[in-house]
Length: 492
Image 1 (cartoon, rainbow, N blue to C red):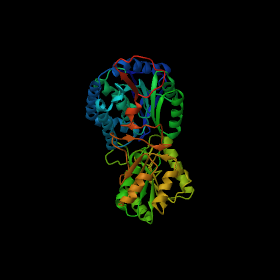
Image 2: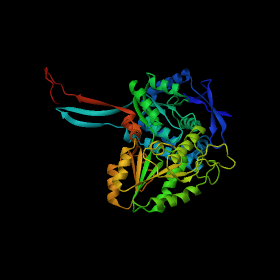
Image 3: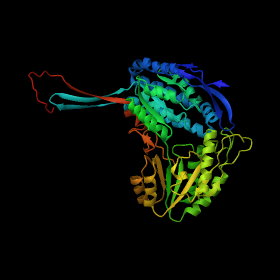
């Protein structure tokens, strides 16, 4: 088996005698090993970032952008190979993995605009012959902790703007599918990124704690579960670090009585079951207003039954496995518990095996109706291909469901009624809103940002990251000579 190394100071590093297996979720077979960083390895990565910071932060913005332009081209030229790495370790289909690389390229394209976007402002004559300006400075060594579900895209949402702003970066990817992250670091080096500007270290909780606590790291960005997000946020804040931490989701789609149910059924099938439901913006709750629930359930029953399960690299596969055995068992147990609690299984493929891949971590598309609001199937993020269908009498009742849920990552409405859509836009308690769009992840020129327990911190990823990865300095200047003393505190 291959070994996936750390990447420190422009070179692969073996660091750490403790290793774990990286497993193909479709076969339950190990395909690589990855070392867990020891303290010396983490310290070496931080030292590399510190040593590279002065040179990179003083590199002209246009030259930083040139490196990012070259990297963007390399990323797309290697999209097929990168997608294969993701599929082998994560399990998602090759087409889905290739789409992730394209989304990662969007974030890089945004960062290529750094010369226009990393700028302050100047105000003339803020006082007699006094001018005031603001300038933006990079922070230093920044840390990114990314999840398994989008191993490339989430990293690029952080790394791109951080590097464009003049920071150096330490990337701690999920140990479950880290191969693509190291390959991306290699491509950055090929694009001309100086050694030490981007470093990749693998590890467990102790590695994360070291990165957060070290005096030489300045900022921490995290994506993962809400439980861990809150821990990371609290620890980083206590250490005096700038921090943004993104957590779980339970994204609702409201279906109005005037919606085209065939379109809705198609969109729900894709948005809930795609990537085996392992997307932060997957729709996991359909809220049907009025009398359309049963007709919609009939259409969903047909579509969910037709979804093709299989290994991500196999032709014709639409939904691959979940990431590991623990996730498979947890999701299957949640479905059983919901049914035992009175939910109606319109479709239950949660325990379905795939011929030839009986050892794989497969969970088939499942549709549950008549689920109680208090049940775990509705309240918890299952992170699997499980759709809960709720019934309400009005848009207001549906909006109250969204408001009262602990998560607020995304929410969508399907309707032909402009007034209903407008009310939904105003009132839906989530950071990303879709109108007749099932998965409303904004383009990189906007931002990725949740509400409530879906996010801790007040910035966001992609275009919102410029303020996170820079600190402002305000300069008040006067060049004429002023004689005399004045002990009062005067306005300008």
